[in-house]
Each structure stands twice: as C-alpha cells, then as structure tokens.
Image (cartoon, rainbow, N blue to C red; front, side):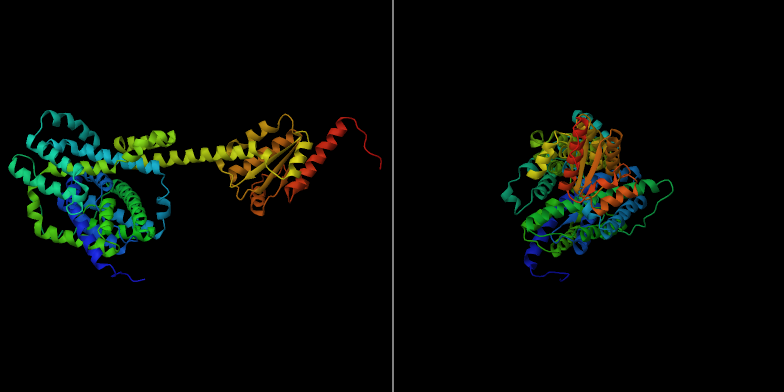
Length: 548
C-alpha cells in the first residue's frame, strides 16, 4: 500500500482548505481558553494536525485542539503556574504515552469504555467550557482557573457587565447558533462570527481584545520537572494521553461510519502521540482527533491523509501572514464561539431520551457528569467504568443464576425429562453454561442449597456447556458438592471437559465429588441418579429385593 494516495488530490485539497478555515477560529479560542495564548492554539492545530495525519491510522481524521483536551490542559497550566518547561513536559510525556499505548495495542481496550460514561464526561466537559466562558461574555475574566471560580464569577459579571462586550458576545452567539446550514457550506458559522464580531468591535469600543500576538515560528522548549512537580506532571500527562486517545478513536469511528472504511486504532494512537510530542516541544497545546473538522473535511471531499496535512499547511500560511490582525479579536467573540463548542459537546440527543432508557444508565451518566464538573475527569471516568463494570457483572450473574437454578427443568431430551419426572423430584439437574462469572459464583452455592434442601436425594451437575471456570466458580462448585455430601445427597457430574477438571483438581475443589459418579454424558448420569433414588425409595418403603 502506498504511503500517500494521490488519487484524490482535488478533493483532498478542498477538504484540507475548508478544514483549515474552520479550524482557525476554534484554534484561537482554544488557545486563549487554555491560558497558553491564542498562538499556542494555532500551533497546536498545526503540529498535531500535520503529524497525526502523516503517521495516523485514519485517512480522513483532522486533528487539533479539542474542547476536552483544552479543559484538562487549562487545569494543568493553572496548577503548574504557567511554567512552560513544566506544562509542556506534561504534553510531551502525554504524547510519548500515546505512542506506547499504540505499540502495546491498547486501542482495543480504550474503546471498551461504556457509552453512558463517555456521554457523561463529554457532557461534563461541555458544561465546563460554557461555565468558563460565561463571565467573558460580559467582559470579565475569572480571577482563578477552574470550574468553581468560573461559576462564582458569573453573578458579579452579570451585575456589572461591559455592555460593548455583552453586545458583541450576544451577536456572536446568534451567528454561531443560527447561521444557515446552506451558508455554512461556503462560510462556516464560527469563521463568520469571528470576522463579524471583530468588525463590530471596531464600532463598539471598550470590549477587551486579545492584544499583540507573536508572529513567526515557535521557539523550542526543553521539558523539565522537579521533585515537587513530577507527580503532577505524570498525572496530567496520563489524563491527557487517555483523554486524547478516547477523543481520537471516537472521531475515527465517526469517520469510519461516514466513509465506510475501517481505521487502524494502534496506528492512530501512534500518530496522535507523535503529534502531541512535537507540539509539546514547541510550546503548542495538545490535541486529538476533532470530530467537527473531520466531518467538514469528509463532506468537502477529503479522503486521505493529505487533506489533514494540508489543513495544517493552511494554518501555517495564516499564522505567518495574518497574525497581527488577530490582535483586534475581542475575548467575547472567542467566548461565544466556545459556548457553541461546549453546547455541541453536550450529549443533548441522549439527554432528551435518557428517561426512556434503562434508569441505571441515566444514573451512571449523571454521576460521571457531576464528577467531571465538580471533581476531575480521571475520577469521573474511573468511577464510571467501575460502576458500569459492576452493573454488568450483576446483570450477567442474575442471568446465569436464572439459567442454572430456574430454567434447567425445561431443558433436555424427552427421555431426560421423563427420567427426571419418574424420580418424583428426588433428582435435581443443574445445567451450567459458561463461562460462569465470579458474580454468579458468589451466590450460586446458596441458590442450589435452597433449591435442593427439601426433596432432592441426588444432584446432577452438567458441565458440558461450561467452557471456562475461575477460582470463584471452582469454590462455588466445591460448596455445592460438600453441602450435598454433608446432607447425605449424592453428586453426579457429567460433561466436564479437561480444562475445567484440571482447575478443580488443581485447587482441590473436587474432593467432595465421588470418583465413581462422573459420566461422559448427561443421560447416563441421570439414569444412575434415578436408579439410586429409586432403589433408596424401595428400601425405605420396606419392599423386598427381587429373587436372584
């Protein structure tokens, strides 16, 4: 396969040009919101966009600063007091971690995060972005970084607005939310808001503006850290790496659905890692696969990695030639654009219908959302994944217990069912299906004991469909067999494969299972069990044995 596919140069050219134009106002806004400055956002879009496309595994992916990445990076920037060597050490390390994720093929596991968790933290990030920008719409700047200071600054900003900034911000919001879709094909709403809002500020004087923006190429930054900051840097890098990986792979899935292709997850992580590593070395904010820019690229004709690389080249031309003009852009304009970005990140479609779905998923999503906004992202995702895993195990265990304890009486051939019926409920069959989860194993012994304690004289354990057994399940089998032995009931075993037998033997969990009651098939085991209880019944009833 060719490294560069030049069969669609015209479509890739138009896609890259359009994606670059769309990326301009977003990169400026993300850079300003991060604390590193608008130019850091532009160079983040350039470095991550170019190298992630060059080395990535999704041909149409356009990468750059995204809302989730900027929220985390802004927190890192504030916690490290804006020290470039420390802040961008975290970015470089995050890129290296993403490369390691790709080499170790972690992409397949990152994609296992449940949808309610993804929905919750993405919606939480959207809420954070809106909260951080709300005061700026009124011409004020929160005194401290973080969600809580931003929320506490809102009442004061509303009480004492800068009317020029407020009008410009409202106009910007009106443009980005209500810009006609068919106009957006020729002039994206965010770019229109950037231009029109800036022009309006020339008439309405007094709104805070960006001010002088550095021009030229970025300077090389040597990453460093101290003993006091190493843990902060490592934690920040890990969060950025995980979040960037999830964000990028989700965007890749969107691209796959639109183009009917299949991306390479591991290669995509390596490409994103290379892009973020280089971005960190030059003082640019980190990025990930950007869904909106990727969609614009695809709809404009882009189909290969060339389009994503051209999007970065377009931004280079803009930053080297038009950076002085950006000094006049009001903060309120960028705030309005970011409010729209935050709204788009919130999973409104799911929130509208969540009450019609499983209540547990809604609780999970709301929990993750709340933790994202008021605690931190890594806690939110960790708690969400653990809660989702426990809920899944519980549902799986309930299903397995139901199959083992309740439904086995309706399974089997006519001859097997007739044998069970002839035993007058003295023989009970338990049909294990596998793998048997540890969640079901925890309660299995109790359920079986309750089922057989009154009538059964013999128990048949059918392992034919049990493909795998772990320690928890082995101990459950041991409990069942030993309880039966103590109660004077015989345990018959059938269909046990070699792997299951080795596990039980190795753990010593089969010591209560007689060696002479193990059968290759279920019918033979049932016949032996029925014969035993029948003989015992005759003996108990005082019937004489037939003459020899």
